[in-house]
Image 1 (cartoon, one colour):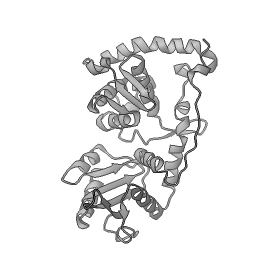
Image 2 (cartoon, rainbow, N blue to C red):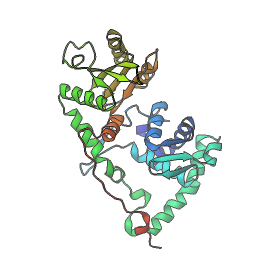
Image 3 (cartoon, rainbow, N blue to C red):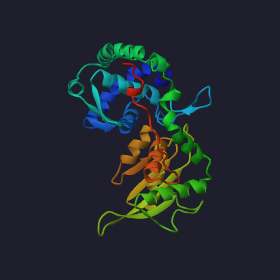
Length: 300
């Protein structure tokens, strides 16, 4: 196969079907779509390592995540063909058909499209006035509700290094780590860390936590030498636990390096960082909105 980014859009969608089934099995048959997406990118060497954080700008100036488009449609096609189910928004599970599948990627693609393509045509026919034909759905429409994610990442990139490091310490504090008032807060001479803290895991055990923050562009991936360097800083401060935060992504070698040794380093890339900011509502506030369901667009 060519580089994933060089494939046509429908070929990207078709290619993703098999990894989706494979990774969902590894995850026990059920996962959130975000967790599944992350695993697909992490474990498939033909998909670019920066797929989750790479953005593009549309002709209208809208910034979006191009990977979401083929991934979302691959999941939808698998649901249509009864390989997956969506028990609730943002969650997918393998059906009995998906669990028992043992064929090749080519067989899966043919079987799925044999079922889903007629369903897309029928859906298009019923909703002509509402323009929901598959070919009419754009990247811009797919990511319309996620504009804030791109906006947040771009805002983080505009922060001064010291302010970004402070932001990361504030996030880790929200995650129940007591931040040290002196270690890792200097712009220079901090010994390779950008924060330090203490996490109490039960009534008497406290773990020393080191923090590293890299405010890097999406094309500048964190490599394994950076992980090794951070682990060296952890040794210096006798930290049992490490948290490495970046606005970009990690190379696959960096992920492997983070899992080596007796002390695993938690990696937080730009996509995960946005999730955590939303979860802990750190300098953001939620805005509630509603999307109309098919009942209002179905002419029957």
